Image (cartoon, rainbow, N blue to C red; front, side, top):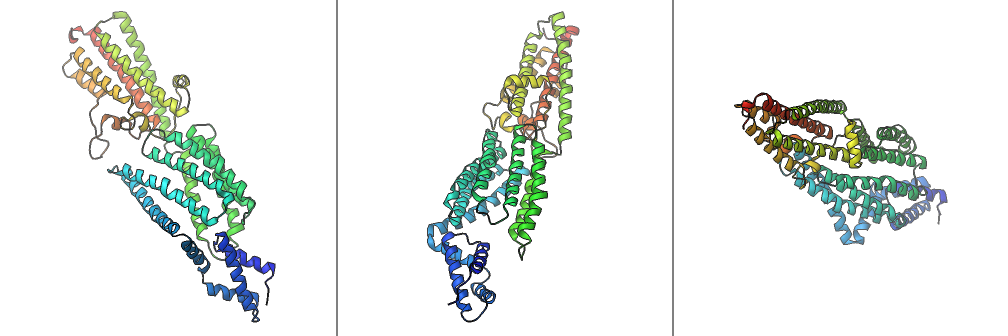
Length: 477
């Protein structure tokens, strides 16, 4: 009987591996079976290449993969049901997520429910099942650590995205550890575990993972507002696109006789990932946010000027009627200042004392996020806006009561501090006071709005003092 050489067996082994046969016991059996069939044909005087071609034709194009699939299905009925359910749930969850995103963009009802359900299924059903299938079919228990790390980090990261989309508090607290686990633990673990048994070029493999790690570092630095975020994103993206992709093509893809679909999908995924990361660093509205910061500084300067004039009027004329009005104005001003300090504190991840110093230095904010979870009462039961709105309405009533000047004063104060529902652009329906001013607003915009209200407080205070001092007849005694 004809026996295959080690070189010929290596050719068969490589082809079986390239077919995606990664269930270890089955892989060994199939290699042995294919080699026996080849030897049987070679006993009839046929060459190795011709015998191998005949055997491959007997198995069919997808024969080996189908054998693996059938074997796995026969091993465990429950596993078969679980794997099929995983595929169905994955498709439905992604479809529901897409519809939820569409409803969210269009401000249609049920968007939040659809997004929440889809994320829950992806995080706690599809993702764990996918990792289990990968672990079981590869059947390499020594790599169990990487699957456990991927599970923990992935669950935390997916949950943070859900919390961010739904504007629930704690999104950043989840995002940071999730991204840190994936960046600083999972990727180094994969490099350590897989570097010795890789079939692909080891240098290319390490370059790809390092570039991914650098990009994830950049995202983490960006979220934490640490310096150097854009440098990491640029370096990581450059290495990924200009080094990893060409080297991977030269060392792996060009050798293949046919175009691999996974390579095409990989290129698309890398493109989307890189573009997203760069957009995170270089936002299109940076110049607009700079304008808002400049506007905020202008409001502060004018507010300070009015405050100095008001103090002069109070100390010079000491109008008794203004006491209650001034006290309420100071209370509202301080509430607005506290909200600004909390925003700066969260943005820079610093203490309240440092936030005060940063505020005094007119710290600039470029962040593209929103403050819904901090400010809106529907997301935060301790929202400072509830008391602020109540005090503003009380201030307006006292102002109208103290200053008697036909309708001009009422119109003036209503324009400054209207808490009525309003329409946004050409949108259908009216938005309440909170949503109109704060929903989905960027930090720089919110700070500018709060500074503008502080200016309005001092302006109303100044107008009231001038009316009391110069026109006592228009003041209710």
